[in-house]
Length: 419
Image (tube, rainbow, N blue to C red; front, side, top):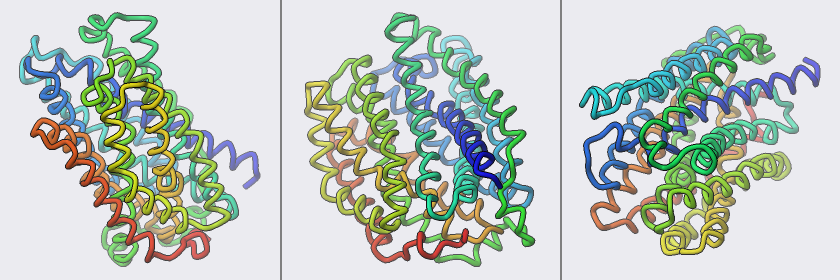
């Protein structure tokens, strides 16, 4: 495969990933506005708790999506799976965009919202494992950490795009009242249209050489269970990293508004600015892992995350200046980058081609469903119970457990199954 073909494939695969994550994170970015539309009247924390619970249910569908699309990718090709997953995401976003509010159809409104999120969870469960596999197999061995880091560049880019749409609507287009009444539907319409564009682009993706050469196309749970150690490593290394990621990204906007006391507009702007810096860090950390190895980078996240999480979250919760909040969040995201930039390539390097997409996606999705998808709900529940600081220690404990995995696993850069 030529250099130009390789770069084109990575860009198209990454752009589709951005659209999928935009569609998924629009829910989190706009939940401050549409929580009232789908649930009965109550205080803000209670309404956000309800929306966070449905956010978590979407994550519970991700293991099923990882199994379904991972099996498809390992048996029928990475391109087929990537194309199908983005089309499913389009359908879920369109459902949310047109669903009537609670005042109109009552309890049917949150039920439809729940079904739409389940569909999006299925889609995203398949997207992660397949796109991580595709980018890792497309990259050259010397620069695999750098190229595969673009999965999180586009993942964060999807989050950032969702927040930028919110900032534009907040600042230049609609009033807060209009956003709460009907304006929150606009980003879901945008997401559905972008997903259709990504579907058309992905239909022409080039299949990877690794899959084309593979004669054993298994992609079954039985085949995956022949690699129990690798499955356990994926779950262990994901646990602390995914919890930290969702704490400093999706939950941070609400944390700034609900705990630190910033306005919704300021909380969104601070979070978006920090995410932009975070996005730029991913290729840098990925390139570093190509030089020093994957394990030292993961250990750096584990050590700093264990030592700094409680002080950082305590400081962010008490900060009153937006610039100070921005700098503190960036510090946290710099630490998390040592996990996010390379976690996809590490997982891909653990498994043989015949079960790689399923091996990357399914155990990761299980860990994300348990720890990442519930992060926001647990944080809000503990806040409502009057024990918000317990959440800080919960994040710290999970990172410490992952640190044990980082310190004892092999360095996949030097012993990669892709090679």
